[in-house]
Image (cartoon, rainbow, N blue to C red; front, side, top):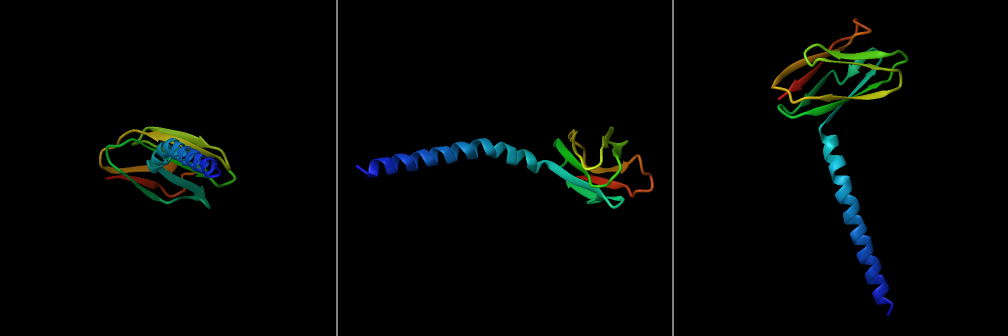
Length: 118
């Protein structure tokens, strides 16, 4: 009789694991379409990110400096203020293949970055 509870526990654990993976799967897939940028020491890192062409994506911008920055791109029609120590998410549409510049509009001396869609 000790085998039945062990088998039931094993099946319950397996079912719970499959359920967790089923719900966790989409969030991992969504993160695959996210570019990460960090502003620190007067520059964006990385200075260039590559994204798949013709697919929407997100850009997470983290401000590691002690002053607000503004993530801006004329070509992408985006501008978002990022307070010090904060992270924002910028939703981007599908882009045709090409290069799209971004910069910190509050600090024009900062080197520009580039999103490459290919």
